[in-house]
Image (cartoon, rainbow, N blue to C red; front, side):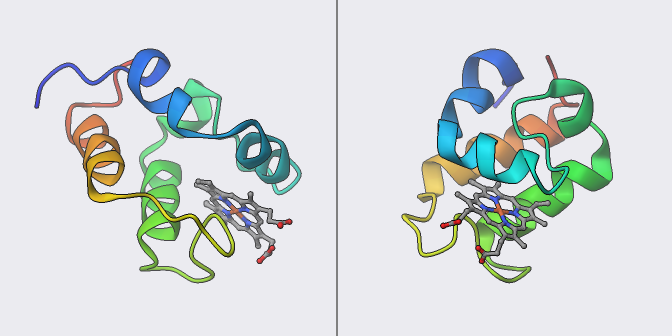
Amino acid sequence: MADVSFERDIKPLFTDDDIDHMEGFGVLLADHAWMSQPGNAKNVYEYITGEQEPRMPPGGPYWDDAKTKLLSDWIEGGYQP
Ligand code: HEM
């Protein structure tokens, strides 16, 4: 899928709780400049899928396939703002 936008499509997938909790760990989920660094985006993706543990958000609800695919499409689409 082309043209996945961070502001329009990805940022709204994170809850205020997700954003607030992770900011304390230096994980800036709502910040395009941080999220668009390839290593950061890859880590976020892997915590969401459980490839890295603990799977995020802790205890769930975990992202469904549609949300997870949107994130991987955004990464493959070149981290569009
Ligand atoms: C680089 C990516 C990430 C890392 C390294 C990371 C790491 C952590 C760690 C170490 C904790 C505290 C330990 C725990 O409560 O089990 C935590 C808490 C949390 N994380 Fe993440 N996380 C990442 C991404 C995310 C993402 C993408 C989400 C949401 C989709 C998320 C949502 C949360 C929430 C809501 C908490 C607080 C849980 C609570 O206090 O009840 N995190 N994260």
